[in-house]
Image (cartoon, rainbow, N blue to C red; front, side):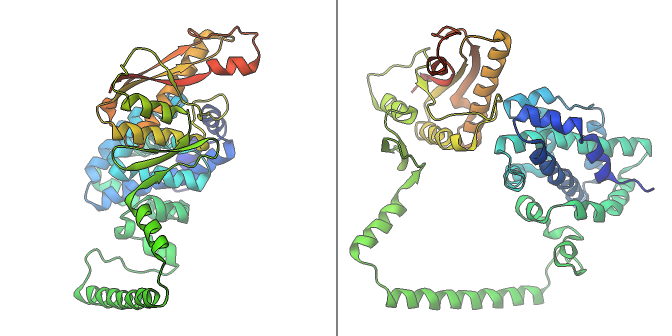
Length: 401
């Protein structure tokens, strides 16, 4: 039986391994398995793109390097939802700036969080590359042999790729041989440089589309004229960017850069803005700004989807006050294993910091994260849950404004 690279990797990341990963990420095993079904061929497609770009030797070096990493690919690194840093290095080499887009596609395709998708990709990349690297070493393959081998695996890789994930997640694949026939069902020769005739047809299509669009909008303009009040409303929407949607005690907060946040009155966004705008407020070592709409999936460090609105609001605030510097602290209630509480609180603080950076906050604005566990808990371990929950928080300490 001929070697099947896709199936080889799937065997490494199946059964107990999938269940362990799902448990750490706080996701269902079914969703994690579905995500892997997409990530594995996606990574291999990225390698195919490097091969076609003339980077066979680089791909070979990358795979043999990854072959030295053993399962379980540092699964403990997943507890913060950020994944393996070495795995992220592999992803950035393969996909570059498209890594984030691929993670978003995996998230939508498999029904897992963005953080879980990124973390899962970070351990799948070295698994895929490692399997390829071991085959390279076992067969004493050189760069030319790798190109021939992957060309032979091309059909299996493309057939394993979910269509929706392929089209949304990996950009620039139109130059990859075999893509056209996968999605149209008809074998179409791939032409990497468009001919003059092709460009002429594209120009004609563009002009026809432009004429149709002009006719439609001109017709709409002459037949339906908005009232001045409607026009003013449309212009006001264009002039400001509104973020978030809050139904409990809502308040609109306008930032110095013109962004308008919809937040909860008295919530962490409201508190931070008041602090930054108050000339008398002073940075301190205290952690008084508590995320009040932040939850995690189960007993994990994976931020729930509904919590991302507040995380992104805080990111907008920090970007609007570029001189601000913060620390993020994780706190737990009393009771249970103190070491485990401290580790979980730090993992959650780390996950929030990572989410803020992914939302555009520059690295220098987040000085550090720290997990305090139950060190500063106010309520006894046998106190009612309504009180103990107050000790269970992620908070911000402003160190510069």
